[in-house]
Length: 84
Image 1 (cartoon, rainbow, N blue to C red):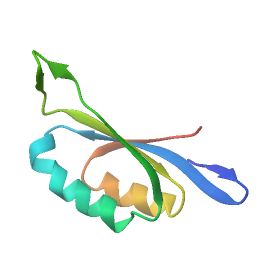
Image 2: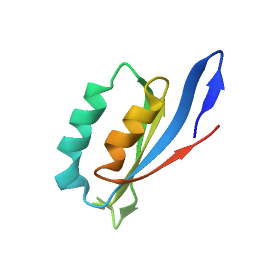
Image 3: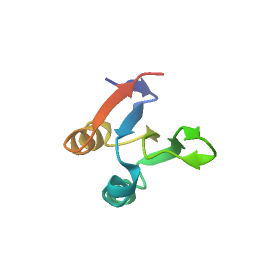
Image 4: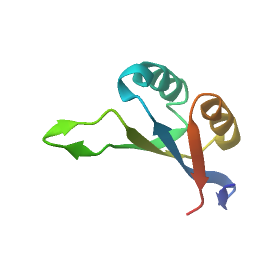
């Protein structure tokens, strides 16, 4: 589930948000809680007819507590962890 580089676990976790408007606050609280373990965060959402859609995917690069963060996020959202 993770890559070990110099004894440091590193993973990319993708989080699927079905309703960004209602789920953003809960996700932000979790990401803030693990802010020191998340090195990179990228938000992806399709734009149609020049307006934002409510569906989105968040990618995070996790450099510590990989399994703990995965477990917490999996309680609320569909997620995938990717090796790189």
